[in-house]
Picture (cartoon, rainbow over the protein chains, first blue to last red):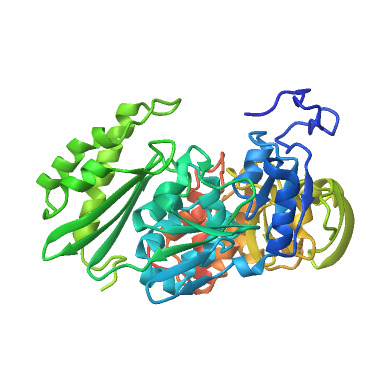
Length: 315
Length: 166
């Protein structure tokens, strides 16, 4: 993925090789601004439209810039907008500010108690040095198809608050992720928070992921949420990531688990439904068949977790 | 800072305890700034897209990837590199353990490996070998096979009264 020497930028801007024979992954030139308020941020977005990109933790965006996968003319650094950071618990929901760092979410007792799915998923979100800097809202807005948090948000029925100069609109996670790196966000909008319902009585969360190295993006991952009462599952939500262009709610597999008692037989029945839900592609590393096989293996783990005692579940 | 987007900006920060003021290109990442503008070449660049971990430094006390942070974003911040952390002596027992247990060969990953490990073995809680592997998972080493690195970090944790079984 290294750019070749002398590779020119189509729009004639600084190529980035500013030392003789300089090699490496350097971002294209851009202009940078760090607004002091959300109002100022909207002002910049209004001026530059889709030529501007918001910079939060930058753990995906700056990598994409270095690899020349993105070349915004203006980076709008929102790290001074302290109001956008923090976790608030209300009666029915936990609100996670967009600028909340992954490390804060990972270590929050409120997240552990009220959103155990996120608590289970956080150690899989990249590596410690990335989690210190990366943000919740950044991960959601970047919408990498192999990222953990978008799938968790879909499973948990999160609602995202998208703000613009004209106001705030609420978009459910299921409608937010449109495709690979594509979301419902308009160029004049910023994701400011996620409202996530607290785990209900007798609900269980489960999480499993396969990656080459702990903390890397998933080859296949599964976020699960379900009610487990009197030995039977209901309201089952199995959401895969890494197997489509966005998080995939495995409707058929989830439906077949409704009312069932977790057992090897019910898991097998759900696995048989997966080809209706998932259509992974072949890529340079893994064939579609292999990904589908692993998706089935993760299903075993997640259903086991649904019926296991304690582990990450609220009593 | 200015309200208008700029390609160059003046920044003031603290690097290894010393105040630094420079004019920087906004697209320059922290590690290039440290290496090229401040001659602090102990921070290394392997992949420059956040995968290898060789550029790890501390920003306001927390480990971060220097290649995924713009120098301009460090305006007003406190940055610590392997040079500062070596001089202060805060890593000396960990460095000694790396030396004694052969936890490095070519040394390319070592500064970042030490800084990353330091966050764990000076964290004040019990640490298992599995914790160490997970914590260091974001740092590539192409020489050692990691076993000796885990040994050295674990030995340091135990010496500091933080070792846990396995």
